[in-house]
Amino acid sequence: MIACVNDGDVIRLAETMASLCNNYPRNVLNSLMNIVGTHDTMRILTVLSGADVPDSKIAMSHFYLTDEQHETAKKRLRLVSVLQFTLPGVPCVYYGDEAGMEGGADPFNRRCYPWGHEDHELISWYKNLSQIRKNHSCFKNGKYELAEARAGLYAFTRGEGQERILTAVNVSDHDRVLNGGGFNYDLLNDKYTDLLTVKAGEPGIFAIK
Image 1: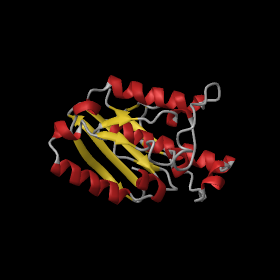
Image 2: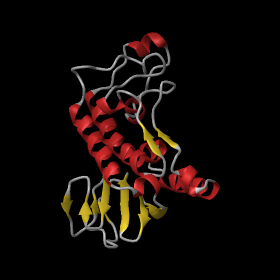
Image 3: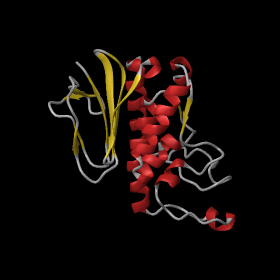
Image 4: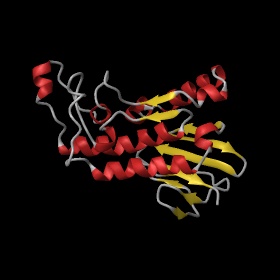
């Protein structure tokens, strides 16, 4: 997921998912932990920023993202989190990632939760993803099927028949239009749509209503 968003490597993610689907029964696949950050890794926001994080502990203790790096990371985090919540598996969010915490390697990835200084925009984003996942059982046990993986667009469906959801992440610099396939409702923005457009650098989650 991280390489897909950071490097635009949609093929690698498609191949990884194909391997997982071929080697795990569906009930096992849907029980795997979808993790993008833990106490053993740099904070996901820092990883996604593209920043050159210093190696020394002293320098790392004073390192923070610039405003530009922070905005880049937030935009990429929205892409990664959509994959984390909609691909087969169970999304496991490391405390504070949903609040916009940043930090290098241990122990700077374990700072105290920023009570009173949370990124409420990100928290709302994660709440929305959680509600979408809760409302659609196909994310818990639905079939995964690749729809497209090329030119910076990675798209797949979960579920079967009318009970399907289409997820897409566009890591390219150009807007992309997806084949409708009956999907007519934009779940992220809670509205009907006639054209499935996924803007450059943005995700989309679409249902059939």
